[in-house]
Length: 525
Image (cartoon, rainbow, N blue to C red; front, side, top):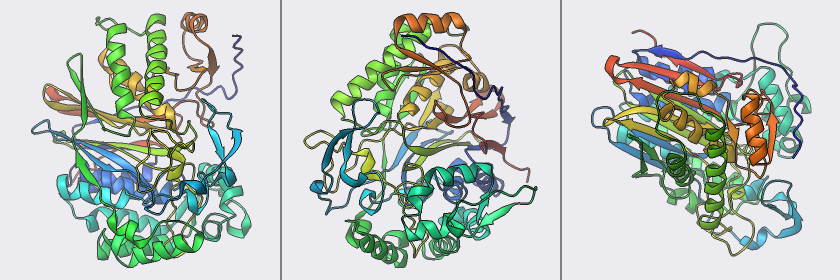
């Protein structure tokens, strides 16, 4: 296969890691990371910080995540090395009718010939929405592993909601990309398309905000009434009313029945490091399968940079892991989803890896008028073809690509990481773990090292790779050389933290091309 690469933007991007003996929060938006750091400064632990950050991300980065979505949180306890997973993934409504999602006979251009659904009902609009779990999961994480109340953790996000959505060029880009769909829904149009058009960022340094009055009221109501109000109280009634008016199958009973859960991680001993990943219908199973295969392909050797044979091993093991994923777990939507990932570590060494998502950019494109909540399009995670393991069914959890991980070494949390980017998440997390363990890289170097993406038929290869490595990959596999640009991003966007036990030093790193991503250090008290 001929692969001709012509550079487009010619950026040389870098975001240096931050190191501190104090706590760190890494998120895809610096304002949200500041909310988490505020919790640390107030005496909170990594869980408190992660929950505050996730709630704030739903305000300042609503195209990625929010309280109308779902996620996974993995907590590593410094004192004992114990690792637990908080599962707050989506579930379909009890009255979901699979016949409402007939196939058109066409196929998408994505990998594996993904079938198209009539009217894109599984992709956009009220019938694409599943019961959200984020509020329940974040509240459960605080209850079991945090030190702050839900009211305290939501306070920074509530202030941000009252301030509004900050408008910069990246906000405008994300709204513009979804504008054709957002305008079809009154609640969405009212929030994101003032004067029927995407907002224009200011040309000066002054910040402009889009008002979020309904969402701000919802956050304050949650702060006062508690998180179960989202599922059983005033907020739940407003959500159910708006959903039914729009044609969703979700009822008040579905909301009241939702519960997040604390479960054991699935684990893999990877050369003296225990990789703790989420179990069941997540990206964790495929991640661990790929790592187990990598351990047989990459020699256990002294510090070295990965060579051509290593990158071929990455590509082949990941392709095999994805093939197994489709055989045993079913199909999941290719890499069109938008997700957010954050990682946190406190001064004691407690760690959190948290992935939260609305799935597509702005999820279903529906903002509920009464509450201002952007809603997920969780039906997209189901295989629309009937009779398969992951087919659309009532009261069922779909197969997700989310893949947060906490790594423990010598019985203590050593690193926490994850990424956003649909199917591309698993290859990113697997390679970064290999860089950290197999090649003994520090966190920043692992994040800056060029990666490949083997989640689709053609392997995407970072153009920064050595020409000899690219030539070897080209001889072995169908590849495409791609530029690691701001938009569109051909690779998943990771964030992570690590800790050097001997000196109690924390490090945080993020994805350099992600414009608003940042590592924020806990302020001195």
